[in-house]
Length: 283
Image (cartoon, rainbow, N blue to C red; front, side, top):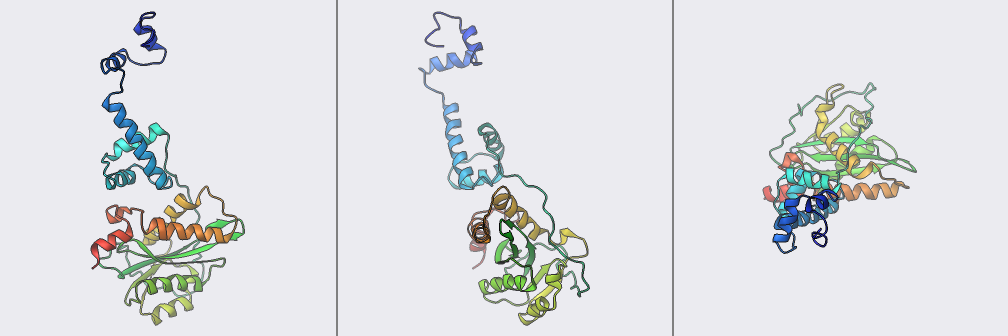
């Protein structure tokens, strides 16, 4: 436009690239240099893309805004949301997943001690336990987890190609070793046959834990564990292909131990990672 302003009208030239005349005149007034606003937008684009890619495309606007603030770049999440749309960046979306719970059995059921009390005042007060089944080309790979409700830290987990009572005991054993063998902890689960088994309940008793189970057909009673599995599948499993169970296990390890426990920001923790939450509050 600047090169041809003597040959054509500014109105005509601005219509073709769909730019405003006022913008062109401001550009000329600044000596052909971009103004502060577009420069800031370009810089913000770079920051947002860097933080988005560092989070492996898992974080939406609110968590990205917190990550940018930690790096000294403060923007509200509405601005970040607009920036993501402009750059065509979209956090990984979820889909429905089937339940792995088999509650059709005649085994005894423990009382519902947790009563949807998903807040713990100290570590090792309340654990929630559950099982899910991510898929690899070699077949199902069953994952059992143990989450401490104090910080949402995954304290224990175990994987196997078979879903057994030993699998859930192994996950809890890891959690107890990690937490230096606490006693008196409420260990809450659904009514799956593995959790109702004699092996599991005897193991809880031998280790001084209190067995709690959800009510019949009430998924909300174990919502925190379900939330973890939702995040895992949306952010690390869905859309990926795992050729072997070993590759699947490595992906789960990376997500739980590297991403979820250390960098993910649960809303229940005021958007602070579980490891940092405990470091700030536990002496």
